[in-house]
Length: 53
Image (tube, helix red, strand yellow):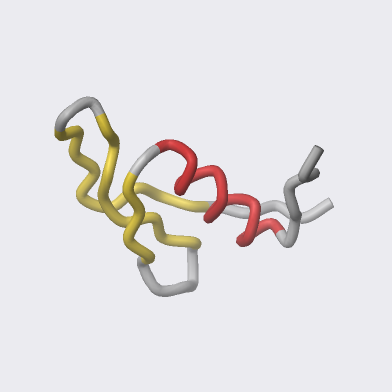
C-alpha cells in the first residue's frame, strides 16, 4: 500500500463542476475539471488502475 498526500489548489465550482489544481506533495500541481478527473489523478498518483468492467 502507498500513502499519497494531495491537496486542492485554488478549487472552485462553476456550473456544478469542481475544477482547480490537484497537487501531490512534492510534485507539480495538475489541472483538473470534474470529479472523475480528480479520481483519475488520485489513482495515477497511487499507482492504481481502474477495473474496466
